[in-house]
Amino acid sequence: MKKTILVLAAFLITVSGFSQSQFDKFEDMENVGSVIVNKKMIDLVASIGEHSDDAEAKEFMSLAKGLKQLRVFMTEDDNASAKMQSSVDKYLGSSSMEELMRVKDEDTNVKFYIRSGKDENHVKELLMFVTGIENVKVGHNDRNIETVLVSLTGDIDLRKIGTLTKKMDLPKELNKAEKKGK
Image 1 (cartoon, rainbow, N blue to C red):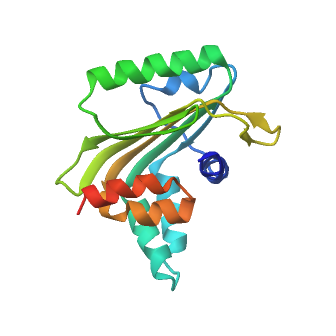
Image 2 (cartoon, rainbow, N blue to C red):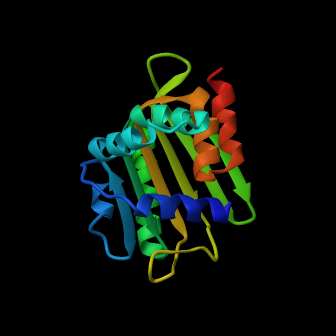
């Protein structure tokens, strides 16, 4: 689980962009790292991978093309973590998100939420909120992280989540989302 979050953060740190969202306040907050990837950057990465002969890479790029935005916020600060928790709770209370699943591993809690899409196989948003992470270091300063908030928006095909989990070394539990989409 900890390796998964580290790999996700490392992958996302290689790209950047600009966006506005209900979580933008975390971008400028002290002790919070952020990665915001906009549609143009996602399209650029997807177009580069389109020319691959690898079927799995093509499926991954197909999934990426449907994304509009990717936002990741991470912190080790207790105060920032509490503000993130409060913002997520408020957002979930005022949106049409539904819980997809929860995973608890020792002190680490991972929660996945979705907003329905055009049909039962697609979602408009996938939100992941992770708390209680220990001994995971990211960035050039090897900062410890405790809390991570990830939001993917766009047209996300749940049937292709398996490809995403394999390519980005995400939790295998996320494959349950793929089964929901079938």
